Length: 262
Image (cartoon, rainbow, N blue to C red; front, side):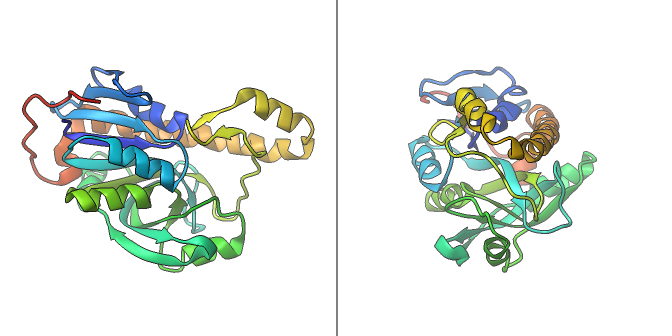
C-alpha cells in the first residue's frame, strides 16, 4: 500500500517527477518507481503511456492509495497560456470523439493552488479537457474548450474516474507545452504510445524526408525544454517540502508500513 500515486504518460514528464523523488528506487512492476516525500508520504510513480485506455489500465493496477496525482503536459485552449505555464485542474472534462464533452469529473484544486501561491509559483486554476486523441484542428479545440477548459490532454479522465470509483481525491497538474493555435507536427510513430518514450531512430528517419517540419519541431523542442524545467522545478519543491498536506489540504495520516507491493 502507498499513500500517493503519481501518474505521467511520457518519459520526460515522469523524469520531471522521479529526478527529484527522495529515496527513489525502481518498483517491482515495469514502469514504476517508488520513494518517499519529505513529510514521509510513501509514493509510487507510474509511467502510463499515452491515452485514456493505457491510463485506465495503469490506474486500476495500482494498489490501495490515499490520493491520485496526474502530472504532465497539455496543450493550451486559450491564448492566455504559454509554454511553461502551470494549470491546476478544478475539474476534468471527458471529451468523446468529435469533441463533445460527455462528463465533468470533480478534481481537488484548492490545496495545491494555495500551496503553490504561497511558494511563489503562478498557477492557473480551471477545468482541463481530456480527449481520446490529439486535437489537430481549431474546431476540435474550440469544442473541447467550450465548457471553459483551459488546457487539453489525454489521460486525466481515466485517472479521475478511477479515483472517484475508489472514493479518493484526484489532483491534476499540467504544464503547457503547445500554444492554442500551434500544431504538433510529429511524424506518426515517433512516440511509442505504450511506453511514452521517443523512438529516436524513427524520429530521425521521419524528419530526414520532411525538412519542412524542422522549424516547427525546433520550436516544439524549445518549448518542451521550458515545460520540463517548469514542471521539474515545481515537483522538486512539492516532493521535498509540500507533501500530502499540500495536495489534500489537511494533514493526512500516513499508512503504516506503506510503500510495499508495486
